[in-house]
Length: 183
Ligand code: ITT
Image (spheres, rainbow, N blue to C red):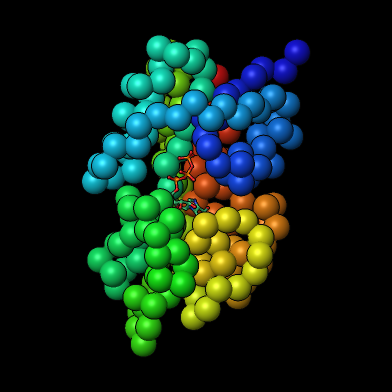
């Protein structure tokens, strides 16, 4: 019987990206949308740590994650506000804020929190730039406007497998997987 790992997330695209890397290892991945308060914190780590504290008496072994897009010329906005910014002004709004801006550097960050009686944090980041216009229909969220370093394509133009090779989440998941393997 393969070990079950529960991913607490409301986001089925995040789940698909995690499945792509974790399933081949022989674990069974289960998505649970339990909801936890995403506190208005100043860092992704704080959101994740709070989420673990909230859920650890409700679920035995699980992980969750918080991600954000940090745009250099906008003083790291939207960062920890990535979710409300996406659901309000969206990609078009972010591109409007960047009009005529030469410095298009940005970083995507993911922080994973795993709990199995003890809490552990795994981080991943992906440097890249904000595209001039949305490109591609794969993925979710800011994917069409983010082009990772080393690629001409946006995340929106990549398959899940390809995105995982570059992405913040792919990197954090690979660190998490190393930990799972040696537990
Ligand atoms: P959870 O239930 O796991 O929290 P969520 O969709 O609320 O799922 P986050 O708070 O981590 O996820 O995401 C913040 C925002 O950033 C949200 O609008 C996402 O669409 C976007 N986002 C996160 N990861 C992304 C990625 O890999 N590519 C594009 N957009 C991403």
